[in-house]
Image (cartoon, rainbow, N blue to C red; front, side, top):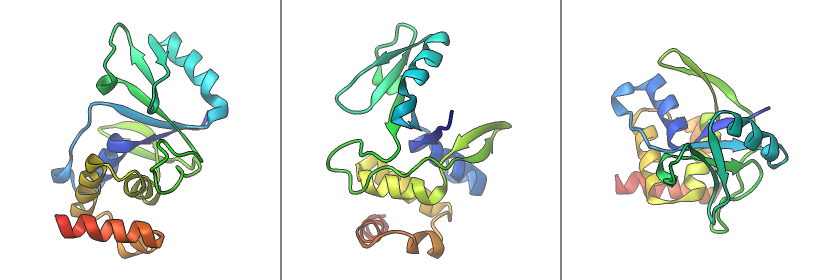
Length: 161
């Protein structure tokens, strides 16, 4: 079943590969899946001790007795927006195999991750963009792949650094 590690942890994987001195970690895990795979994801997660919880924001998988969204797995859907204010829908799933500390993960391509971060436009996403930029990941080629609105948001992030 196709999935991608997205969000702050995906940023960590890309940054660790390029410049580990710029690394930062978030507590939660964000996975992007296809909505059609949701029931299968819930079943597989339940076999491994996770419980599904529908939420106002992203749906999540909670482990064991935990009720903390901060320590959960957030489920995002390809081709959909997480919030109505999101500038563009999430991209289609097109995972790239990455390795971090000897473990392989199915991650999101850097350009897609950057689009998601700039589209979401929360403060923590802007900080993640700053970290990716400081690590040298946002090349002119990646920057030029952004639409005008997202290029303007990138310029804003760079100006506020």
